[in-house]
Amino acid sequence: MANTVLVGAQWGDEGKGKIIDFLTEKADIVVRSQGGNNAGHTVLAGDKKYVLHLIPSGILRPGKQCVIGNGVVLDPVALVEEIEGLRGQGVAVGSNLVISDCAHLVMPYHRALDSAKELAKGKNKIGTTGRGIGPTYGDKVARTGLRLADLMQPEIFAAKLATRVEEANAQLKAMGAEAVSYKAILDASLAAGEKLRPHVVNSVLYLHKALQAKKELLFEGAQGTFLDIDHGTYPYVTSSNTTAGGAATGSGVPPHRIDTVLGVMKAYTTRVGEGPFPTENSEIADLLHGMGREFGATTGRARRCGWFDAVSTRYAAMVNGIDEIAITNLDGLDTVETIKVCVDYQLDGQTVEVPPSDYQRLSACQPVYIEMPGWKTPTDQCKTFAELPKAAQDYARKIAELTGGKLLIVSVGAHRDQTIVL
Ligand code: GDP
Ligand code: IMO
Ligand code: MG
Image (cartoon, rainbow, N blue to C red; front, side, top):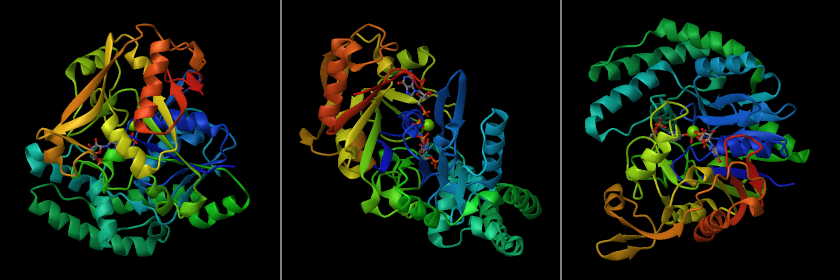
């Protein structure tokens, strides 16, 4: 039995949802421990496409349990919509979903503040998803947040919300933004709260009982290493710990009960929103966008694209303790003649060992590339590693070697069955 943390090793959208769905077949419980509905995890199962935002991607596998842990920030109205949307697609959501009563609530004023702050930043904006994530984590850290436990007690919630709305409206007014309505928020939140009530538990106790019963846990990371509030390209990051350590604090599962860290990375690099991106490249962006690929699952924005960056994934391997590697979207490079891989950064005429911590210096880094021959053959029907063209095998092995970690999975398409296990 192994408890696994799956993390994104780049800037998010690495294909975590697809890999989680694949691995859930063998796990018992899938746990989200950070982030909120800024995440968009795509799973293709049969002829259906699902995009999960707050609910763990394990929900699509009958008989598996899903947990939204204490470290997640959740918008109760959006969560109810997601549950109902899944039910509309024929997915059972009932006792298979449990939610921590310590999860912080994203309220409409958080979304309003998110937008107002972005607007005020002008050209220095972060390019957030607009889901209110930063302001909600801000309240959590400032110890003024509202939690699901509050929403379960309507009178307490109503009183706390009144204070919070008053403060938020003062802030919104100062920023020239529209005020939010206390009554509208109260009514919508309480209605959503009643629908969520059957799912709300002390998830720490729930997970400890599961560990005692020798259940296998799979932690579904959201976002990616370089969006981490501590280790990412600050301030162009999200507001949670997206790296492996976040799985322990965000769920209450002790670190020593985590056995393996699986790093998911695309065969190239993408990023949405603003911020430094050393290997960004317009040719590969045009190629992928031309194939109808790399548009955001949450906001629909075109993702920025670039070559694989082994300097950053090497750092991701270090900060997460990546043992195993899943490479996704290898098929995205099927038509490329010569593939570049960044193996070093040059800054001020010197090689830097790790990505500089400040975004100005990181933006000034010049990538040093090696070139590898493309395979110019479709890989999407390959079922085993041996069936991949030799150049594709070499490329996947090179990425794993440069990053450091055992190559476990190569994904050659969005469907469940387009997954090669080594
Ligand atoms: P996540 O946020 O990490 O779960 O990733 P997203 O779902 O936001 O973005 C990944 C995109 O790549 C989705 O559209 C997936 O369906 C798709 N995808 C995942 N793996 C593969 C793959 O190996 N090949 C192809 N063609 N698409 C993939
Ligand atoms: P998944 O789980 C890619 C990015 C936003 C923005 C920054 C801050 O699907 O990989 P936020 O709304 O969190 O305050 O935005 O983080 N971002 C993501 N980029 N994938 C995600 O999630 C992301 N979640 C947030 O684009 O640059
Ligand atoms: Mg995504």
